[in-house]
Length: 117
Image (cartoon, rainbow, N blue to C red; front, side):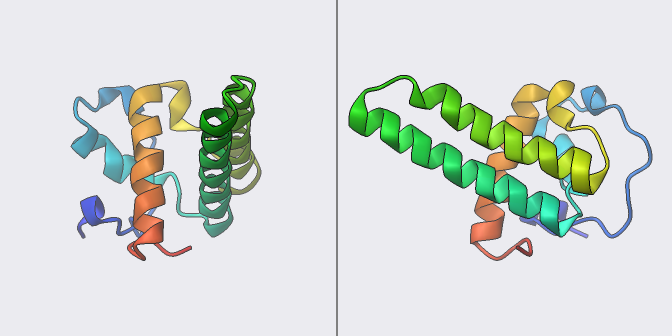
């Protein structure tokens, strides 16, 4: 199984502390394992898309108020997905940078059809 190309792990990972990973390449398979639920992935995708729209609005209008709106959209959708559907805690609580990176890699992989939407 090659999780670096976006293939989701078939089985849930045992309880793992995401702080144990020292590289993003080690972390990303764990990250994908935390996103097996289709609704959770769709909410991540929606939140990321809305976040990009808010970023575009910030650039077009120059109004910095779009920044917190974008963050609220992105993290709000993701957290609803985790708490409501995936039934786990977002890894962003313990590995915020790797989780942020993982979200955008997963977003790209969904667009490319490597991960089911």
